[in-house]
Every structure is written in structure tokens, then in C-alpha cells.
Image (cartoon, rainbow, N blue to C red; front, side, top):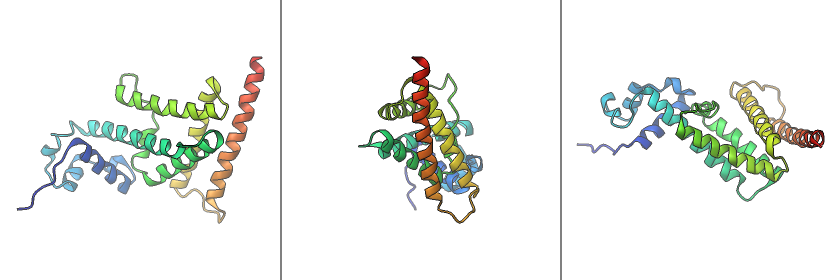
Length: 197
């Protein structure tokens, strides 16, 4: 008799994340398919997951945790422009490697979602510290974070649907995009400070 591996909520969520990435979407991860992959029956899943909505929420938490770890690791030991470039590159790699659950990091959590709210706040505070090391603070930093997210998501989304077909180095395009954004951010921040004087 083959001994089954011991399952817990974390291992179930991790398997669902693998399936989402393989399929390119969490919508392809059904409880039936997940149970089959884990070699258990659907009722056994309910020992770990309350419902499909609960699984999606758990995947969103997992995605945010993974993104935070990835960005924090990329920024470690760097400050200012270097840190922002490292974070941008890490974000792009994360989106490339996790097409299934990356989209779960995009939506702002609802006010009553304590867990996702705390993770979103943790990510924001990390980015605000990095922006501060670049000389951008206060409302300017909030604008900066929003702009950087929009730039990164736009590029990675186009990349994921093969929106860049011209035979020109894509990594160089990305580097120039982020460099130009950061240069513009510095100018916008300086202009904002002048207006407040």
C-alpha cells in the first residue's frame, strides 16, 4: 500500500499556485482538478480549503507574500536608483514566472480583508522606504509607486501576450523604460517641491 503524503493548507495552496501558473490563470484551477492532482477526493480538500473562494483568497495571500519576498530580496543591500532598478527587474521576473497568480497581486484589498490589507501595507511601506532613499517622499512617493506599478504592469502584460515582436533587444527596452521613468520621477518630484514653496 502506497503511503500518501501528508497534506496541509499550505501545501494545497502551493499546488494550486503551480497549477495556476501552468494553466496561465487561476480560473483553470477547480477543486476537482486540484483534488485529482493531489490524488485525493474533493471532500478531503475541505479539510484544508473551505470553498473555491477561500482557495482564491489563499492564493492571493500566497502571491503577495511571494512578491514581497522577491522584491525585498532584490532590494537588499541597495538604495536609491539601484534599489528601484533591482525591484523593477525582480517584479518583471515575478510576472514572467508566475502568469497564473501574478494577477492576484494587482487589486487593492477590500477594507475588511485584514490579512491582504496587512500584506499590501507591508509592500507599500517597503516601496516607500526605497523611494525615500531616492529622494522622493510624501505624496510624491505615493504618485511614484502608482506610476511604477502602472509602468511595470503595462510592460509585463504586453510581454506576456507577445506584444513585442520587433527584433530589438527587449531587456534594453525595459531598462530604458525604467531609467526614463525614474528620471521623470525626479523631475516631477522637484517640480512639486517648487510649487509648494
